[in-house]
Length: 115
Image (cartoon, rainbow, N blue to C red; front, side):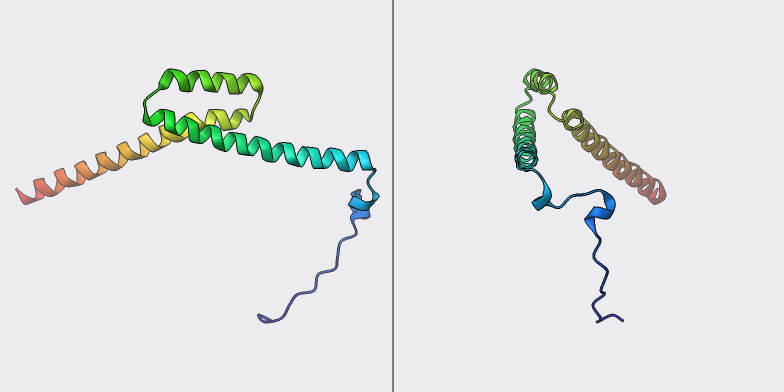
Protein backbone atom coordinates (compact mmCIF):
# COMPACT_ATOMS: atom_id res chain seq x y z
CA UNK A 1 0.00 0.00 0.00
CA UNK A 2 2.84 2.39 0.78
CA UNK A 3 4.62 2.14 -2.57
CA UNK A 4 1.43 2.19 -4.66
CA UNK A 5 0.30 5.28 -6.49
CA UNK A 6 -3.29 6.16 -5.70
CA UNK A 7 -5.53 6.83 -8.70
CA UNK A 8 -8.22 9.35 -7.87
CA UNK A 9 -10.96 10.05 -10.39
CA UNK A 10 -10.55 13.44 -12.08
CA UNK A 11 -13.24 15.89 -11.09
CA UNK A 12 -15.40 17.33 -13.81
CA UNK A 13 -15.18 21.14 -13.48
CA UNK A 14 -18.61 21.55 -15.09
CA UNK A 15 -20.17 19.69 -12.13
CA UNK A 16 -19.21 22.49 -9.77
CA UNK A 17 -20.09 25.42 -12.00
CA UNK A 18 -16.47 26.15 -12.94
CA UNK A 19 -15.52 26.73 -16.52
CA UNK A 20 -12.25 25.69 -18.05
CA UNK A 21 -9.97 28.53 -19.13
CA UNK A 22 -10.49 27.73 -22.81
CA UNK A 23 -14.25 28.25 -22.40
CA UNK A 24 -13.92 31.71 -20.83
CA UNK A 25 -14.53 34.78 -23.00
CA UNK A 26 -11.35 36.74 -23.83
CA UNK A 27 -12.38 39.78 -21.75
CA UNK A 28 -12.77 37.65 -18.60
CA UNK A 29 -9.41 35.96 -19.30
CA UNK A 30 -7.84 39.41 -19.49
CA UNK A 31 -9.47 40.44 -16.20
CA UNK A 32 -8.25 37.27 -14.46
CA UNK A 33 -4.69 37.90 -15.64
CA UNK A 34 -4.95 41.56 -14.54
CA UNK A 35 -6.21 40.55 -11.07
CA UNK A 36 -3.42 37.99 -10.66
CA UNK A 37 -0.80 40.57 -11.65
CA UNK A 38 -2.23 43.26 -9.39
CA UNK A 39 -2.32 40.94 -6.35
CA UNK A 40 1.31 40.02 -6.91
CA UNK A 41 2.12 43.74 -7.18
CA UNK A 42 0.26 44.42 -3.93
CA UNK A 43 2.10 41.55 -2.20
CA UNK A 44 5.40 42.95 -3.45
CA UNK A 45 4.46 46.43 -2.21
CA UNK A 46 3.46 45.03 1.20
CA UNK A 47 6.79 43.21 1.51
CA UNK A 48 8.75 46.36 0.58
CA UNK A 49 6.68 48.39 3.05
CA UNK A 50 7.29 45.96 5.90
CA UNK A 51 11.04 46.01 5.15
CA UNK A 52 10.97 49.82 5.14
CA UNK A 53 9.07 49.95 8.44
CA UNK A 54 11.51 47.54 10.12
CA UNK A 55 14.35 49.78 8.91
CA UNK A 56 12.56 52.81 10.39
CA UNK A 57 12.10 50.93 13.67
CA UNK A 58 15.82 50.32 13.85
CA UNK A 59 16.33 54.08 13.66
CA UNK A 60 13.48 54.68 16.12
CA UNK A 61 11.44 56.89 13.77
CA UNK A 62 8.02 56.41 15.38
CA UNK A 63 6.37 59.46 13.84
CA UNK A 64 7.35 58.49 10.28
CA UNK A 65 6.05 54.94 10.86
CA UNK A 66 2.74 56.30 12.14
CA UNK A 67 2.36 58.56 9.08
CA UNK A 68 3.22 55.71 6.71
CA UNK A 69 0.56 53.47 8.27
CA UNK A 70 -2.02 56.23 7.90
CA UNK A 71 -1.15 56.64 4.22
CA UNK A 72 -1.43 52.90 3.62
CA UNK A 73 -4.82 52.78 5.31
CA UNK A 74 -6.04 55.67 3.15
CA UNK A 75 -4.96 53.84 0.01
CA UNK A 76 -6.70 50.69 1.31
CA UNK A 77 -3.76 48.32 1.05
CA UNK A 78 -4.33 45.22 3.11
CA UNK A 79 -5.58 46.75 6.34
CA UNK A 80 -4.87 43.58 8.30
CA UNK A 81 -1.29 43.73 7.01
CA UNK A 82 -0.88 47.31 8.21
CA UNK A 83 -2.27 46.55 11.65
CA UNK A 84 -0.18 43.39 11.96
CA UNK A 85 3.02 45.40 11.57
CA UNK A 86 2.60 46.96 14.98
CA UNK A 87 1.36 43.73 16.57
CA UNK A 88 4.46 41.73 15.54
CA UNK A 89 6.87 44.01 17.38
CA UNK A 90 4.60 44.07 20.42
CA UNK A 91 4.55 40.26 20.52
CA UNK A 92 8.35 40.13 20.22
CA UNK A 93 8.74 42.59 23.09
CA UNK A 94 6.24 40.66 25.20
CA UNK A 95 8.01 37.35 24.50
CA UNK A 96 11.40 38.90 25.31
CA UNK A 97 10.12 40.27 28.60
CA UNK A 98 8.59 36.95 29.60
CA UNK A 99 11.85 35.12 28.79
CA UNK A 100 14.00 37.53 30.78
CA UNK A 101 11.62 37.48 33.75
CA UNK A 102 11.54 33.66 33.81
CA UNK A 103 15.35 33.55 33.79
CA UNK A 104 15.51 35.95 36.72
CA UNK A 105 12.96 34.02 38.74
CA UNK A 106 14.78 30.70 38.20
CA UNK A 107 18.06 32.33 39.28
CA UNK A 108 16.38 33.70 42.41
CA UNK A 109 15.02 30.25 43.29
CA UNK A 110 18.44 28.62 42.83
CA UNK A 111 20.04 31.30 45.07
CA UNK A 112 17.43 30.68 47.77
CA UNK A 113 18.06 26.94 47.59
CA UNK A 114 21.82 27.53 47.86
CA UNK A 115 21.45 29.61 51.04
